[in-house]
Length: 112
Image (cartoon, rainbow, N blue to C red; front, side):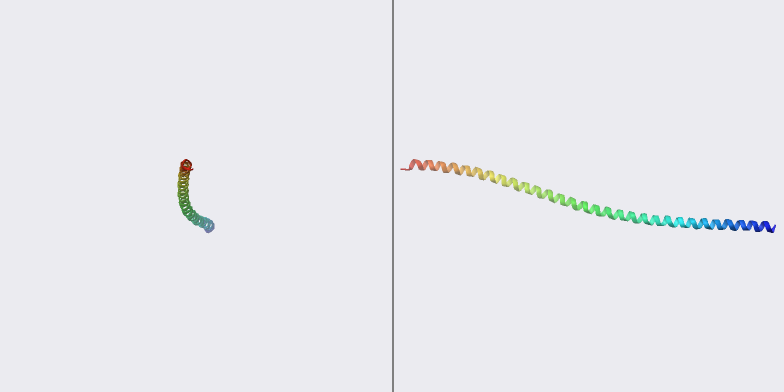
C-alpha cells in the first residue's frame, strides 16, 4: 500500500512537473504574442504617421498645382491682351499709313 501511494505520489509529481513545463511554455508563447502585438502597434503608428505626411504633401502639391494654374491663366490673359494690343497697333499703323498717303496726294495737288 505504501508502495502504491509512493507510486501515485511519484506520478502526481511527474504530472505537476509536466504541467509546470507546459505552463512555462505557455508563458513564453504569451510573452512572444505580447511582443508581436507591441510591434504591430508600433507599425500601425508608423503607418499613421506616414499617412499624415502623405496627406500634408498632397495638400502642398494641390496648392502648388492651383497656384501654377492661376499663373498660367494670368500669363494667357496677358498674352491675349498683348495680342489684342498688337492688332490695335497694326490697325492704327494702317490708318496712319493711309492718312499719310492721303496727305501726300493732297500735297501733290498743291505743289507747283
